[in-house]
Amino acid sequence: MKIALMDSGIGLLAAAAALRGLRPDVDLVLSSDHPGGMPWGPRTPEDLTGRALAVARAAALHAPDALIVACNTASVHALEAIRAELEPGIPVVGTVPAIKPAAATGGPVAIWATPATTGSAYQRGLIRDFADGVDVTEIPCPGLADAVERADGRAVAEAVAAAAALTPAGTRALVLGCTHYELLEQQILDALRARLDDPAALTVHSSALPVAEQALRRAGDTAEGGSALLVLRGGETVELSSAALSYPQGRLLPGLAEPVR
Image: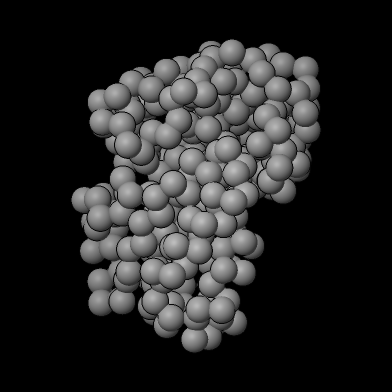
């Protein structure tokens, strides 16, 4: 089995690690944008869609059994275009902030997301559909995804502290609404412990595991893989970056193996 994942950068690592945990033999194709293309959030929807399509096409050349759009922003703006081009030949799985399960806890809920996603019609629609009557606070996290991408510890700490300061003390469910943030779950929890009224009651909701499970379902009953890894940057084969390997999820993946064919 071969599953491809796409993102502007290394936000796809959490879902990739989840896939390896569920199916250790899975072959993975990790496709991301040119270094200068990240982040996608500040770009116009048209520019973002064009870039996302290019990254998806690079992954599709390797004939995966399914493709995960491991980016909330790309799922908002480009998922329909990617599906129109690749399906039904390659099933495409988008990434949706885990607002529904977070709201099911009764809240209060805080959603950490990029400025582009925070307050967007898309996110507001999810809140309306799945969290009606629940106390929800949207927390913009400017610069956090960029800092994660660079593995810039100081910038990450500053952005996490700023978002934690905006998170209401009564929060009981936290949604990580950007795949990059899932690489920081423990650091985010540590930052919130001193600020919440009842930190032990906090539940964290992310997308990596449910997205991985959905991709395996969509891929169907295919042959076993060989645990190979192919890393693409702007369509070119590269090694897993030092930034990726600085996170536990990245270290769960092997270095560049024989290319997945």
